[in-house]
Length: 95
Image: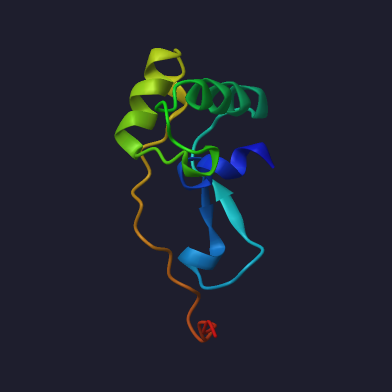
């Protein structure tokens, strides 16, 4: 989908956090409309000459853009510590 471009800024992936695919968590309390608006504005401001598939953005720029758009209160200050799988469940290995 459209939000996959900046997915690491909007979502926490289960494949990274738990080593399991098919799981994700929203990092902030944006509604889908707000997230789409932020995504659209960030795409407009991408540096000239950068390919569409290289639209990387770090967290500081993301926070400043969200603040500029007036959505700062929706950003959660959740620590980005990796989640631990439940005890007794072996972590899947990538091949």
